[in-house]
Amino acid sequence: MAALGSPLRTWRGLLRELRYLNAATGRPYRHTAAYRYLVKAFRAHRVTSEKLCRAQHELHFHAATYLCLLRSIREHVALHQEFHGKGERSVEESAGLVGLKLPQQSGGKGWEP
Image (cartoon, rainbow, N blue to C red; front, side, top):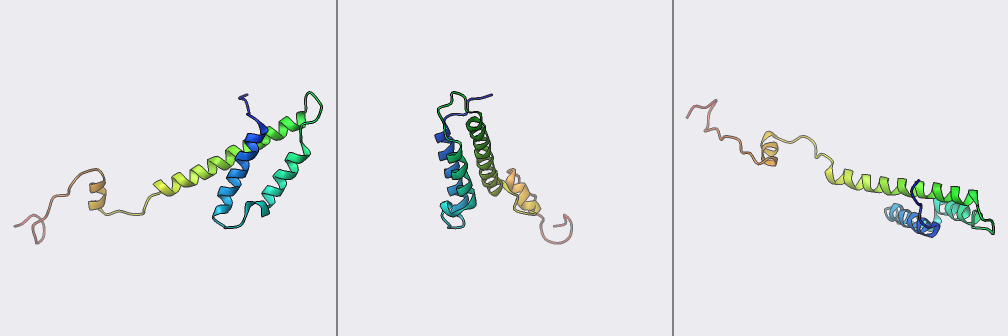
């Protein structure tokens, strides 16, 4: 298993992702249920005088996993918006995308001059 880093770094990363999520709504992230839940969980699983605190390590693992999920979703949405198709394109536009030009027809039906 890879190292998780410090719980403080994970906490700050979670708060950063909550700010990104709530930037669109304009509502402060501190008024969300997710923020209140995270604060309550981190406070309940503070490091004690025990040498091995399984619950604290488990919380940190779940928090790091949730942070990875939030970052991945945000990056996926950004990539989707950037590279999402624009709908149907005409033949001329499609040819222009790959650097080709269509032959020009000179008036009338078919190839007649």
